[in-house]
Image 1 (cartoon, rainbow, N blue to C red):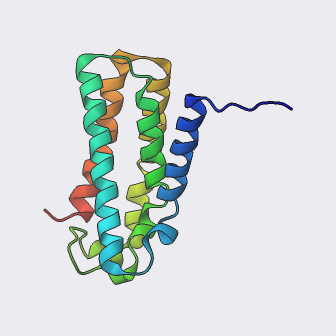
Image 2: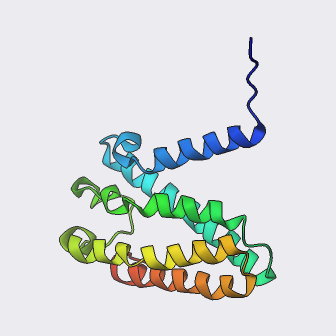
Length: 155
């Protein structure tokens, strides 16, 4: 009888895939409670901020950029359906989302779409191991995030 073994790498890949699926299905993960949707959204954004901080440390140290690909993939997955994380019933509560998020969905969606190119470039730079190009690519992503924050997030 053949014996199957699961490597630690396979388990890590499976766990990462499960996390990406969970993050990319906000309706399934969040339910319909507005307060929970807002908490889940804020927790996800805090995680994205932690990814950005970790990558800033890599850029500053001019370290190996290849491990950042996993973080970038998580960011890409999180923002793939980010507009769906703002259903109409989450306008009030502990959120810094400005009303314009709900009144100008087309603009909000465009701002989110603007993140795709810089993230794809950052991923490519990270995967190539280009430590000199990683910082500028990360700054471009940060600038795109900032533009969305200025328009759609309160202080």
